[in-house]
Length: 112
Image (cartoon, rainbow, N blue to C red):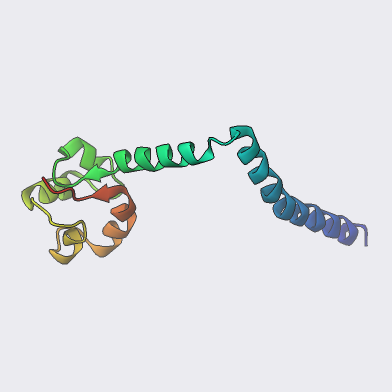
């Protein structure tokens, strides 16, 4: 009986934290930025675009930093250049579909 009451209390507390924790933190972040949230969002988008690995120009070390890419896949990616888009890694069977799913959000194929 005591265990059941403690368990119910624990569940209630966890639910309250989940429900109210996210709702409270979002407005505080927006208020603390004092109107600079749009600038921060655009900066983070630009930084995210800069963090993408360009499969047309990256060296082997940068490619091997991607999850699931080792020496063989890095060499195959470099050998298959240039790519019109990043999906060609999968359609041209340079890397397997499972590996492509791991890295697709982290790569880009920029055109010169």
